[in-house]
Image (cartoon, rainbow, N blue to C red; front, side, top):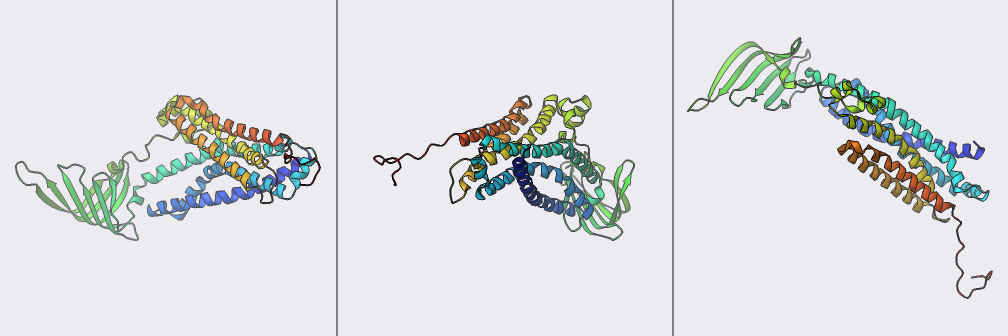
Length: 382
């Protein structure tokens, strides 16, 4: 690699690190705030919130890197142009195709980063996040630690807790079980505890009352009350299915998705075509990084010099990137509806490469001089 290539590559990599840091920080903070509100309301600690936000970081980085590559290329090329360095390179005989070589190398480096994330860190982080979410879903104690608010753990079930003591006792408990219209029950207790047993969680209530409303044949419904010193209530049925959902395809490695085995299909509930589509979607994702870099560079080479800068070329680049991203969204949606149509996932990167190649071809064409006004001799002053 020549010195000029190393110089341009260093410029793009420096700007790439800056834009990646800024964009990742913005997206990650936004996601962290949402997780913080959700987990704190569920009674989780700050360490759990930090763990969950850290597990979402690889996915955020993989989504942001192509955009950061585009921004770094636009900014770096604009800087080379404004400082007349790009003009000097072109005057030295370097064509737009030759100048695009370090940009392509830069895009491939960003693409390798996205590939490492998409095929390695992101599936591992998703798998760990799914396991931790299942653990929290099974921890029914956290569900009951929100005092002063009506909760609905299941259809037809209403729960209210007056307060929670320092030792974990639930004070002034109200529980309505109306899942069976023919046998509606209302439980009230001065205090209660949630205990884990071999057969599932149990709610042990002390010093309370049961009110049972049952319809009577040919008459008004009858209300019966029963007072108790202690009573055990099975709350495992309220959380049936927690942690037993089908596993997400995105938690498996790409190689298993491209050749799914029966164990994977049984765990996820997906078919062969859907698993392969997920694998090809990961393979197509890293291609967007070099395409975005080439779009940013090629579009800034279009047009003549202007003292107002290259904002028009930047706008063209942004529009081209938006078109490619829109095509990617449409292709992913079509592949999700028709898994056998997975080849469409590679069309957006190919379209972006074609747009960048066309822009470089236009920039490399010899530009004709401005046409002289009619009747003006050659070399005469206008």
